[in-house]
Figure 1 (cartoon, rainbow, N blue to C red):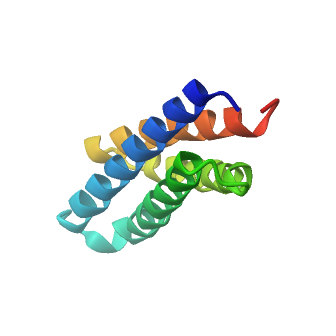
Figure 2: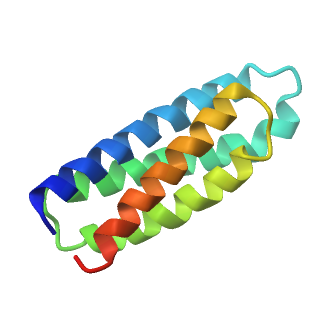
Length: 111
């Protein structure tokens, strides 16, 4: 994997983690928190997966590809759940998840 592609994926991962953290917090502030519970759980899982993948990429770990595969899957799931809500923070999060999933997938093919 090229150093520049590592950097781009790391940035996408950290951007997604931030969007997920912000989404989870905003979901906690929603009037009916029960309908946001699944979104919050996915946000937390996704943020952690993104930070983990970014850290392994930054260290050029031999497990980076596997971490990116997992991260892409978690991002896809989070994007699907957030995409079901009309809240702006969910839309922003879903978009960040899609970008991150694509970046992570690019680390796993042809790398």
